[in-house]
Length: 319
Image (cartoon, rainbow, N blue to C red; front, side):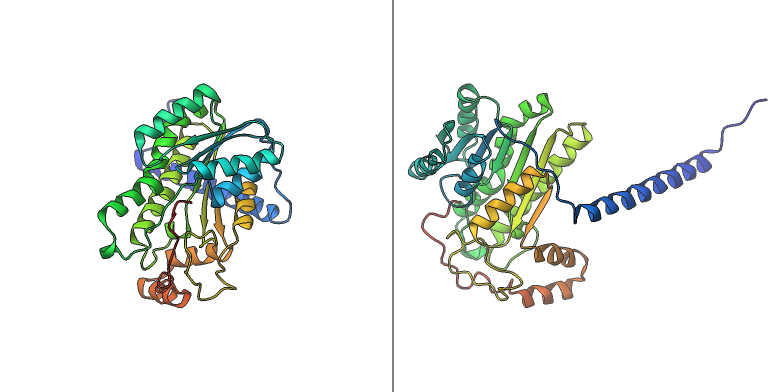
């Protein structure tokens, strides 16, 4: 007896129903999994022997992350435009007993220099398996007051540098299906801030790029390469000196050591997004669902319109 195939419309409807039920079931399962892990600590992975490259490691969060990774038995590759800063970070790391520390002066805004220094790292150290894009700058000027050269530099350091370091080091990770990409972005990469147009644009770009690469890796089956995107509020490193927060209990200026430890923990537990402080998860969520007028009102309430009014920064704005 010959059975006729179902009409295309019916087949399409059946597929839609089945896929929808599958997705709903998985959403329920993943939600339950997330709830359970709120009470059960996530197991941390072992990164001993991994080659960790940190850009902007001559000061600030970059230096602190290097010190944290030093305690985990990693091989450290330190990049910064400031040679003296690099030497100081290397000295502090060696005091912890780490012997494999490699320092390279590199201007991450220069594509040719990134590629050249990356080739040198691969020859002298080996393949990088944990890449931390941390270098960043801020102009701290209103858009119309910011010179074109500084706007371009913000995009080159805060966004485009990530493209070039990924191009340089991601191929080896893909070949081995092993590695970790860490994007140190900002809460200003999720929510626009008055007086930070170029900085916000660059950090939005960094977040979008890192998230897209993460999805590209999943789509191509490279599940051994993990990604972490970090979006902190202002950090007390000097980069945003003078900025004041309207509600310190809700949105505190973050202490660098606290942020560095949180980032390392996120890497060790393969956390995809890390927002600091915790209130940023709620604020970012509200920003995405509130109508425009309510969103502007929320921004005014949180002080997003006046954060940069007292900005001083410091002469060396590289973090």
